[in-house]
Amino acid sequence: MLTYRELVQNCLSQVREIMPWDLVLRMKENPELLILDVREPYEFDTLHIRNSINVPRGILESASEWDYEDTVPMLVKARMREIVVVCRSGSRSALAVQSMQLLGYQNVCSLRTGLRGWNDYEEPLWSSTGTLVDEADADEYFTVKLRPEQKAPRP
Image (cartoon, rainbow, N blue to C red; front, top):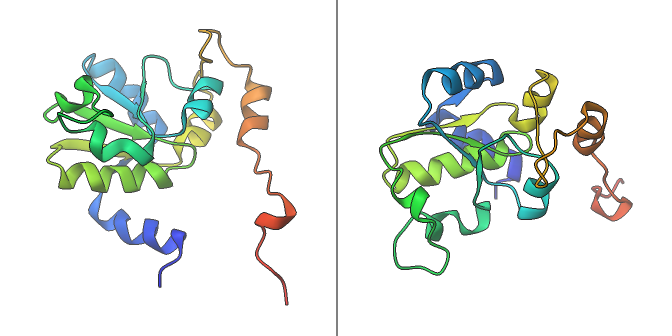
């Protein structure tokens, strides 16, 4: 049986990753670049990269195909576009890229370090209301907050 970390680690040899500074460059060089955020809607509403689209990881495969209630036409039509997939840390996005490659997406990669790294690189994040997220608020969002029942039992 694999752990989540092992599952992500295993897929990294099959997906391409870029760093936040590379994404900044790609956004300048390619105005058609699609940034796909695979976090949950409540996460996306809190903060995201401006002009990114939100398709949660849980419905990604059906959102990527025609004839499903989850179909996102912009995503279905993007198989030949350059796509950078983002999440909080770069793990969900790596798994998403692996699935998208299997579904025929030709030019897709994952943002290594995720939005946490984007924020560390001091790039802007926006809320669903269209306002710039304060850097301190973003730092708070990226602080891990595990409840006691979420921690592994200690012997």
